[in-house]
Image (cartoon, rainbow, N blue to C red; front, side, top):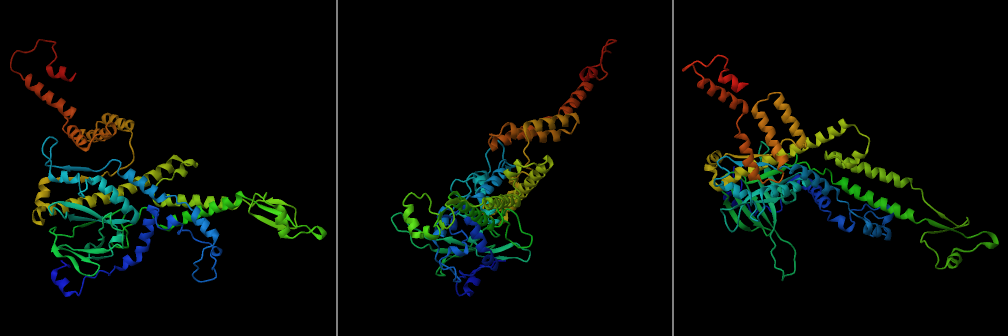
Length: 516
């Protein structure tokens, strides 16, 4: 059902540029924190993510303190951000895209002309980005927020050329869902400011893109139309949601790979507080006696007697003997233990094996269970990638041939997009053992072909997709040795058919010699 019809817009006083979905208003702060966590920007650049202690505000008695003490300023200046979230996403992405998907057009032969979609796969955004590289970048963003929106758009200079554009959840303030929970319409926010290098940067302005299953419209911030509602020609909403993992109870929103961004804020503050403790414990407190009775001196006189030879800023004046007071180190150990526990929790929530576990005493079965959990998680991510890319292929055919011919052209092209369904790494020795076992068990030739195909990727890891496809076709076109032997036997029986002289006594028939 078209929502952005000309009549609907005509009935509205102006485009609803400021309207946001209730779920967007609720989750926008979480998504904003997640972007800071992964990029290490925002409050992690200036130390604003430090949680101050109550006495680190000069006006700590007020309800909203605003005056940081010298100590708080020092802590913020010394704070460092260890970007564990980015490392975690890199680890998962590297394992997920290690093999890459298969993209095959059935009408295409290794020697013949390729289908137009093959050329589009090499440049899907008009900037020379291949489909694999584009989806890898989009998946990293989806891993940050839980999902992203991929828009199939038409190039402004060439409307026949289809390009992909990624929008994060922060860029989609409003949407509509059908009764079945599918996306019916959506609104995106785009930066509209344009300037040259000879102009000073000013305040960014935005525009709003509205899409449904028939129309597209673009409105400015002043609530006027940059593009009036026009048909986009896809016959359905040209937006695909790329998930990392879907939520069970909240429609449309995905589940982030990095989990709750507060975990990383907590880690950032634990690191800062450990640094503070270490700094304070490195330099002890000098205890200077003021004396008693006739030998007593004032603190000012003691300071003057110390002169400039004091090697510490931490000085305590008491009647006791002069000595350095060193604090207890147990609190540092407590902090370090808590920090290690938090790191372990972050990795376990993401189902990623943590390197610290490998140094602990752990059974081989326990390590295998963790690897299996990680591989199963990767398989779920791959399923979502496969579903998203197949939806993009459908949109490409719709945008290229029109909604009426798209089904016919897809059936003719026989496009296959398939992502790996297993991620446990096999070595060449493992595959050789499997092949030997299959031969010993007299497995069907098709099973042995599958093992041979897997061995290709291990023996030739640097082969291009075209080379790999050609080699796989050669494996599939191979002749079953058992079937070949049966053909020879049939030929032999035809040759030795009883017509002609009887062979001399003691001579074995040809079939016996062939099968000996």
